Image (cartoon, rainbow, N blue to C red):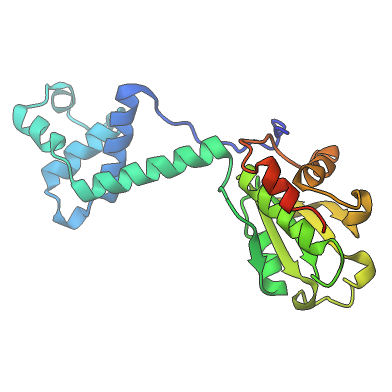
Length: 239
């Protein structure tokens, strides 16, 4: 399910097209250069190239003159380390804009109550976090873990987690009659609280059943691709 306009992350305006890319690169290079090792002339030239608006104190003749061949060659030189850093930053920013947050491909095992809190509170504000609180001695918990493993491969923008009730620090609340429990969060806010979730599923359930259940509440984004075959799904059912 696609997020609403209110949920979309506000992305700073970026320059597009060849001229915009050159402008961004020059600005990045200026900011990342070691100013102590640069000549005054180079610093001033890079400053001018990264700022299309000249300062009022600039000499009009110096501002409007054509760039010399030597200056052009100086700007043209690529600092490989700085260029790599710039490319990496661009890729990360593009990834964040396109995916609206980080990506995952497996279920994260949480080892403590503190890890549980961090998984929710320290996550990207647009990332959906699904937490399964389980005890493998309870019927349905192991099968649900298997189903979530399959869904984690299909929904790469959703952070699927699981934690044993005994390590939550609140195991007295997660008694046998409420397990398996599934909690859903986004931006630190709880969107879903499903206790004894297997009661909402058939006796034998598969990844598609869990998927449909979550979709009934609008708790899953659009699926990117199907990662599980029918045979794999059958293996995720309750024995």
